[in-house]
Amino acid sequence: MTKLWGGRFTKPTNQLVEEYTSSIGFDQKLAMHDIKGSQAHVTMLAECSIITMEESEQIKEGLQKIAGKIADGDVDYSVADEDIHMNIERMLIEEIGPVGGKLHTGRSRNDQVATDMHLYLREKTNELIQLVEAVQAALVSQADQHVETILPGYTHLQRAQPVSFAHHLLAYFWMFERDKERLHDSLKRINWSPLGAGALAGTPYAIDRQMTSDQLGFDKPYPNSLDAVSDRDFILEFLSISSILITHISRLSEELILWSSQEFDFIELDDAFCTGSSIMPQKKNPDVPELLRGKTGRIYGNLMGLLTLLKGLPLAYNKDMQEDKEGMFDTVETLDGALHLLAPMIETMTVKTSHMRQAVNEDYSNATDIADYLAVKGLPFRQAHEVIGKIVLYAIEKQKFLLELSLEEYQQFSNLFEEDIYEKLAPDHVVAVRDSEGGTGFDQVHKQLHLAKQHI
Image (cartoon, rainbow, N blue to C red; front, side, top):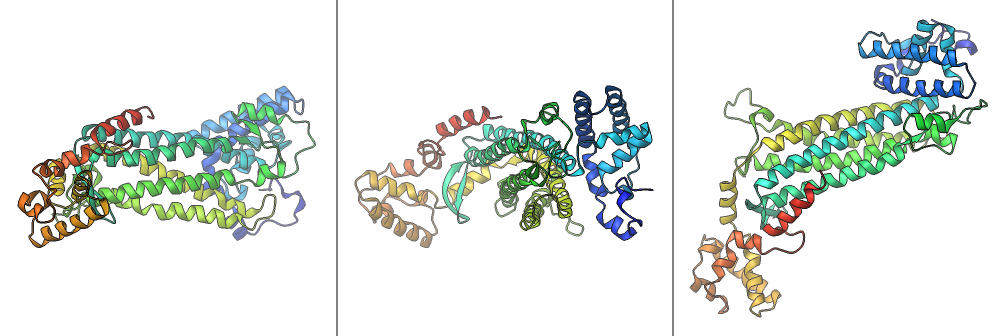
């Protein structure tokens, strides 16, 4: 079939070139956005008397029929037509005749594809914001039940100080809140309209770019036509935000994996989110969080791929930029799948409160409170720190935990110790007294929960 742009050429495109350069295999995801942009464009052409109202209506009706066929899966995309724009234009001409060729008046595939990607990414960013919020709601739901559930807090993966389990979960809530804010903020850059910028220099037709921008719900048209067709910052920003978001998903997944191991045994994931072994019948593998953790690599790769693609490109459009879409699509789909799984997995996990409590009772994570105890009684904290280090070493040698030492044993190290030391070392007291703003004290966690609920 004759190419829509074939007038300049004397021989057909080499078949290998045709297959290698075609993007229809992946950019068909933009089909509905392409039609939406075309409907706005052709409406504007008629309003500006560049085509007639009758021609505009005929084209819009044809586009609507094509949209219906696409929705029904009743279209055959052609590699020979290269991309989604040329495929739809070809279908339109077949549907309504030569008048369909007027659709391309006053625009280029360069501003057309940029418009499609802005529309696509705006839609998907709003969807991802809702999915992040669902994960936050799942975290809040679990946190609500476990304000007074205590588990060891870790630094360097060594037991450090006991914390409220709700406090630990809410740390992820605020990570996701920042992700959500970044996604919201990125919409400011996504919501610029490239439509009408042409190939790079604008168009001699007296078009109205503000009209198409308004029709498509954009905030404003790009002020510079070169920038409009060559800008992929909005995709870079999305991939960057996505890389941070998948990092947070991965960190949470790592903890779910650790906590569900026999060594920790703090939680049990619902069977619906685990798999078994082909030869070891006792196994219950946390495959979902493992795979979520593994997905970081592909999203990081998509970001690095686009950064590398763009770093040496001159203005304006270059064929290299065809490679901007697959990483964007892949990242959207990867995050969509991850977030859809993460929320119900958190919501349905069983928290083994007694195992967490046992872990806290059988460690030295309350040692800092002995130092604080001595400091309150007048011993400088640095000296108190040294005293407690010796007490912990003594307890380890005696194979005892701090609550198991007698008062006489404590008094071997300082005569400041009294009977109330046991009350101070109780895990509930250790957590409750950390009542500074944002701390793990139960009252503070209740306040934090209240604040979190205002964000979902």
